[in-house]
Length: 376
Image (tube, rainbow, N blue to C red):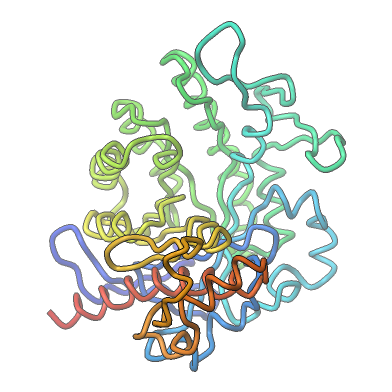
């Protein structure tokens, strides 16, 4: 029986709004998860995601993401466990946390251009074996090993509400034989992770999602979705469609993959976070999203906007005394001119303002879509 409870509020064609309840916390989908990689959303107090004065008539944000790889290395999952787990450690006790498996971070450590071939390949920094993957810390060079079972245990130490299985992240432009072999290995890892987790499923509060990937190869996507759906006791994720692919390819994969997944479980589309991509995906049975783009753009002086992104580094904003968004009460007193000034002076308040604006911009899109969908 699933611990992640669902209640259908409305479903029409390929879109839906569901109420999810996990660990006594309720939220409605579709939902965007701000990324707090290292137990923090860079530059922000997490309290602002629930602050009524900032949110206005929007519901509080109740689900955020953290990264298993980075938290395992620093400060360490055992230390976080001693601190009464991640929710207490980062002051998010009345919200939910999803942690990714850290697989992408491990494999990206060893990703570089092969001198003998015009493609990307894993270098010797990592060593992939059947039991798992050996790697070195990017912080101090120390040796480490991730197995499917160990990654589950690390996330249990973090007290992650929603955990992800360890998967093999194949290098871009790998030949089909390599992709297929590593897909099969990821399937074996998913079964091992699931079997390990299910031994304690009834004793813990957490849930575990498998991950469907394999680039834009629809044949392998289909095989992977069909195999991994058996482990989607509480939900399932779609990955590796938003790294180097075109927007058209991303959408093709999403439209192809989602109908293959269990209809009564949440679908989590990883690393997708532009306004237009969110709106496309929620019309194709996707319920959950995360992406670093909102805060990354903010740190570089770029704000989401209705027509196109606004780059506040541009000189034309030096004397633009209009607010960045006059529909957001908390932003009305911060003109584009002022934010441009902060950027030029390297005052980090620009980072805070734009990161928060971008997160809330995506949150508002989904909240308004849900309200309109339910009222229609």
